[in-house]
Length: 138
Image 1 (cartoon, rainbow, N blue to C red):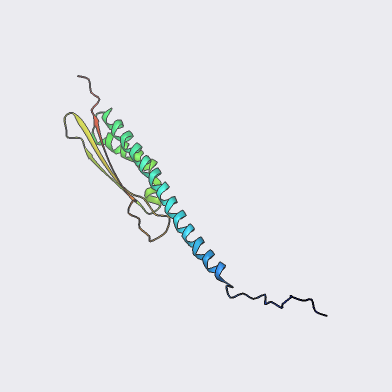
Image 2 (cartoon, rainbow, N blue to C red):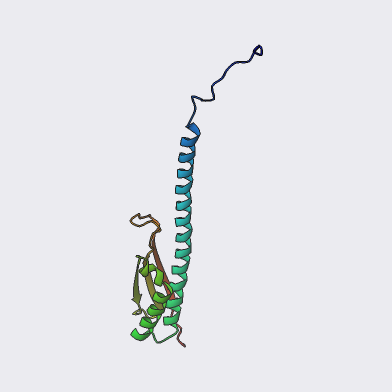
Protein backbone atom coordinates (compact mmCIF):
# COMPACT_ATOMS: atom_id res chain seq x y z
CA UNK A 1 0.00 0.00 0.00
CA UNK A 2 1.49 3.36 -1.05
CA UNK A 3 2.18 5.97 1.58
CA UNK A 4 -0.39 8.70 1.54
CA UNK A 5 0.83 12.14 0.41
CA UNK A 6 3.94 10.98 -1.45
CA UNK A 7 4.27 11.94 -5.06
CA UNK A 8 6.64 10.89 -7.73
CA UNK A 9 8.85 13.85 -8.62
CA UNK A 10 11.22 14.31 -11.47
CA UNK A 11 14.90 14.83 -10.76
CA UNK A 12 15.23 17.00 -13.87
CA UNK A 13 14.76 20.70 -13.42
CA UNK A 14 13.81 23.38 -15.90
CA UNK A 15 16.80 25.39 -14.63
CA UNK A 16 19.44 22.86 -15.65
CA UNK A 17 22.59 24.55 -16.97
CA UNK A 18 21.76 28.00 -15.62
CA UNK A 19 24.52 27.81 -13.00
CA UNK A 20 27.06 26.81 -15.63
CA UNK A 21 26.35 29.82 -17.84
CA UNK A 22 26.57 32.33 -15.00
CA UNK A 23 29.78 30.67 -13.78
CA UNK A 24 31.39 31.01 -17.22
CA UNK A 25 30.42 34.68 -17.44
CA UNK A 26 31.63 35.33 -13.89
CA UNK A 27 35.00 33.65 -14.44
CA UNK A 28 35.47 35.51 -17.74
CA UNK A 29 34.80 38.87 -16.10
CA UNK A 30 37.16 37.97 -13.24
CA UNK A 31 40.00 36.98 -15.60
CA UNK A 32 39.59 40.18 -17.65
CA UNK A 33 39.70 42.34 -14.51
CA UNK A 34 42.70 40.38 -13.24
CA UNK A 35 44.61 40.94 -16.51
CA UNK A 36 43.78 44.64 -16.38
CA UNK A 37 45.04 44.84 -12.78
CA UNK A 38 48.28 43.06 -13.70
CA UNK A 39 48.82 45.41 -16.67
CA UNK A 40 48.22 48.40 -14.40
CA UNK A 41 50.64 47.10 -11.74
CA UNK A 42 53.31 46.48 -14.40
CA UNK A 43 52.75 49.99 -15.73
CA UNK A 44 53.25 51.53 -12.29
CA UNK A 45 56.45 49.52 -11.85
CA UNK A 46 57.71 50.44 -15.33
CA UNK A 47 56.96 54.13 -14.77
CA UNK A 48 58.88 54.05 -11.50
CA UNK A 49 61.89 52.32 -13.08
CA UNK A 50 61.99 54.67 -16.08
CA UNK A 51 61.80 57.71 -13.78
CA UNK A 52 64.63 56.45 -11.59
CA UNK A 53 66.88 55.51 -14.51
CA UNK A 54 66.24 58.86 -16.21
CA UNK A 55 67.30 60.88 -13.17
CA UNK A 56 70.30 58.63 -12.51
CA UNK A 57 71.56 59.01 -16.08
CA UNK A 58 71.07 62.79 -15.96
CA UNK A 59 72.92 63.03 -12.63
CA UNK A 60 75.76 60.90 -14.00
CA UNK A 61 76.27 63.27 -16.94
CA UNK A 62 75.81 66.40 -14.80
CA UNK A 63 78.65 65.24 -12.55
CA UNK A 64 81.00 64.76 -15.48
CA UNK A 65 82.23 67.05 -18.25
CA UNK A 66 78.96 66.59 -20.19
CA UNK A 67 80.66 65.57 -23.39
CA UNK A 68 79.54 62.96 -25.90
CA UNK A 69 81.48 60.20 -24.11
CA UNK A 70 79.70 60.93 -20.83
CA UNK A 71 76.26 60.96 -22.43
CA UNK A 72 77.04 57.75 -24.35
CA UNK A 73 78.18 56.00 -21.16
CA UNK A 74 75.12 57.15 -19.22
CA UNK A 75 72.79 56.12 -22.02
CA UNK A 76 74.48 52.72 -22.31
CA UNK A 77 74.03 52.16 -18.56
CA UNK A 78 70.37 53.25 -18.78
CA UNK A 79 69.74 50.91 -21.71
CA UNK A 80 71.35 48.10 -19.75
CA UNK A 81 68.99 48.73 -16.81
CA UNK A 82 65.96 49.08 -19.09
CA UNK A 83 66.99 46.25 -21.42
CA UNK A 84 63.75 44.33 -21.00
CA UNK A 85 61.86 47.17 -22.67
CA UNK A 86 63.58 46.68 -26.01
CA UNK A 87 64.09 42.93 -25.81
CA UNK A 88 60.42 42.32 -25.02
CA UNK A 89 59.11 44.27 -28.00
CA UNK A 90 59.05 47.76 -26.50
CA UNK A 91 61.16 50.78 -27.42
CA UNK A 92 63.41 53.35 -25.79
CA UNK A 93 64.44 56.79 -27.04
CA UNK A 94 66.80 59.23 -25.29
CA UNK A 95 67.04 62.94 -26.11
CA UNK A 96 69.86 64.87 -24.47
CA UNK A 97 70.20 68.65 -24.26
CA UNK A 98 73.62 69.57 -22.90
CA UNK A 99 73.77 72.97 -24.59
CA UNK A 100 72.30 74.96 -21.71
CA UNK A 101 74.63 76.79 -19.39
CA UNK A 102 73.02 75.97 -16.04
CA UNK A 103 71.02 72.75 -16.48
CA UNK A 104 71.12 69.45 -18.31
CA UNK A 105 67.92 68.12 -19.87
CA UNK A 106 67.22 64.45 -20.56
CA UNK A 107 63.97 63.18 -22.04
CA UNK A 108 63.28 59.45 -22.13
CA UNK A 109 60.42 57.98 -24.14
CA UNK A 110 59.70 54.34 -23.33
CA UNK A 111 57.09 52.03 -24.83
CA UNK A 112 56.49 49.11 -22.50
CA UNK A 113 55.71 45.72 -24.05
CA UNK A 114 52.27 44.28 -23.33
CA UNK A 115 51.47 40.96 -21.70
CA UNK A 116 49.03 40.18 -24.49
CA UNK A 117 50.64 40.13 -27.92
CA UNK A 118 49.01 42.57 -30.30
CA UNK A 119 46.88 44.26 -27.61
CA UNK A 120 47.78 47.87 -26.86
CA UNK A 121 46.81 49.65 -23.69
CA UNK A 122 46.75 53.44 -23.36
CA UNK A 123 49.12 53.49 -20.39
CA UNK A 124 52.02 51.61 -21.98
CA UNK A 125 53.82 54.79 -23.07
CA UNK A 126 56.07 56.45 -20.46
CA UNK A 127 57.59 59.92 -21.01
CA UNK A 128 59.98 61.28 -18.43
CA UNK A 129 62.01 64.49 -18.39
CA UNK A 130 64.88 65.12 -15.99
CA UNK A 131 66.26 68.60 -15.48
CA UNK A 132 69.46 68.54 -13.43
CA UNK A 133 71.84 71.39 -12.56
CA UNK A 134 75.40 71.00 -13.74
CA UNK A 135 77.74 70.00 -10.91
CA UNK A 136 80.51 72.47 -11.56
CA UNK A 137 82.52 74.57 -9.13
CA UNK A 138 81.59 78.24 -9.07
